Length: 515
Image (cartoon, rainbow, N blue to C red):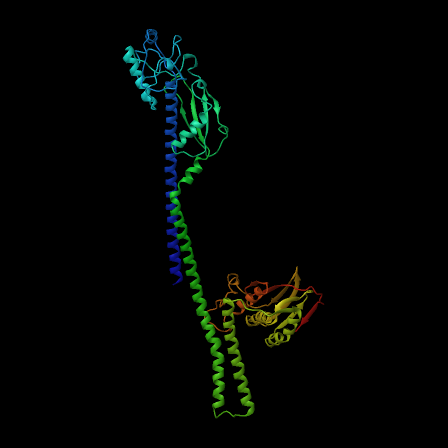
């Protein structure tokens, strides 16, 4: 897949995912608004039921009796209405021929007499429906007296005092039960306000909450002169409403899964594109690395078979040496590929022993110095680590140092100047390999330790290699519990720092070696 196609695919993915996220957010907002409207509707309905229940309870509690009914009682007349009212509740009855049922409640005059309901109402018929019972009582009274009667809430002197008309002690439980019946489970606080001030509030009603919802309702809406208002506050309503919009959760989870899969697919596509480039580069370099020694061996064998070449012992020995060296080179390259593949799958078994790093580097100096001097360069070593003993595999650590020095020589277009430093830092030894080579771009520094990765230079093979050296170096260093860092700038050279943990503290004499 071409780079342009990947970009187009990424843009399409991004736009599609953005649209999907916006759509899900819109669904959630709609669901939240619907739940909020349902909440308001349920609370308003519950408050209407509360006010209606309070009014009916009070109407059933007091009846006003007119003088005609009192006369009838004195003559032995008895009302036998088919209803049930608590005999302990007091009621009063009053004649009201001008008011039809369903109009506003009339007032109680000073002459009205409050009587126990048991004196007027029989209880052999019982019904739970309070409104039906009141209606039947009114009809029974009219049949016996020929007068119209109206239920009124209170006597004149306490008509405007809410304390005398509502059971304030049990109001909290009554409100809670009413809200539960309406399907409201949110925490609530209540308050009753009369004549401009709150005469009763629950514990936390006056505490202000930023997202609370407050609704109110007049307790006696039919009385123009009564100002009693019931307030209900729901501190957690917004949170509960948002939490109850759970039906969008499956869609949200699916959206997250789609986003994750889409991003993962894009990452895989980009990585596959990079791997394809790396693979092609690796094949080109591997072909060149194998082609050269194979061609050399082929040429040497032809020389032995060619009669024109004098088959003297010296010639045969020289040709045999060439064949041997090129065969070793091929074997070494094959082993490097196989070792790296094996190391990526399983943990390589290291043969650990105590090694003095200063001594190991000192032993490698003659080999390095000859190669550097052959290119007209300079090789220096400053072995200044006082404590240099580490627990390591000598063969692999030697290969690590050799790889770094080998790269410093190969990637240098001018006479190389290479320096090795050793120093102590806390309980570690730091081995630095510094060169004046071509340097490494910032964008490549995080990738040079990946297998088969080589800094892109096109299909050129002036520098031999498979891109395995630094990958091998990093894996060996990490296998020893250490780390490797790189600092580099283009055309200014590079500095590789190998940090390994110390095992034994041992004083060493500082040495500075020059070659």
